[in-house]
Image 1: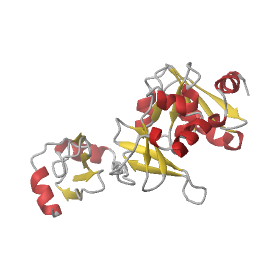
Image 2: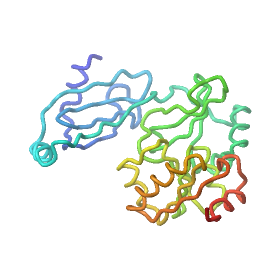
Image 3: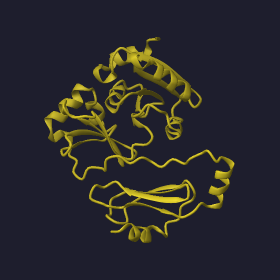
Length: 262
């Protein structure tokens, strides 16, 4: 379907300035795979399914509220979500693949998967273990091959945070596997920010916790301190510098690292 035809279908969808809606795709029928946003006087849309070509933009002009906001802060630019790899058409259960189970066990992520604290699948086309987030409309995939770069690949909508667990103290780590390892403590929620910068959306998502503990490698001490300063304005935040990634540690070792004052 041409973009002009897609717009004819979407034109009756009402959006306020800066509003974003996630709905069932009107073109392929995918469940909650179509996102439509109105930003800077333009409506943009995208479907995550690889087999769907729904994607485009249409300039519609700013609303009165949008014009006022622009005049009040002319330097501010609204952010459009960044879309990465489309969600895989085929994704299978880790139980059907010994290599996937071995990876999960070796990185202390198996318990989180078995407890259904996080959805984990396998992408056979790219040979990656997928850790799902954002209501299963986004995922990060870890390659199982040493010769493939990058190690991690994003699918769909990975804005915000990837959290594993429901405890009120969150431990912020580098990646999804480490977040799963934190879950095994039974005391903390593991949270991966999946990036170096803390976004406004991530700050908002982290408000649900009573306390944050930033746990990064000692080589990333400057990054950890800078991150903690940003987050401390939202939630009380402390820093722990690690000797090794949590995904390589047993639960008792993780607790010792968190409870040790650097």
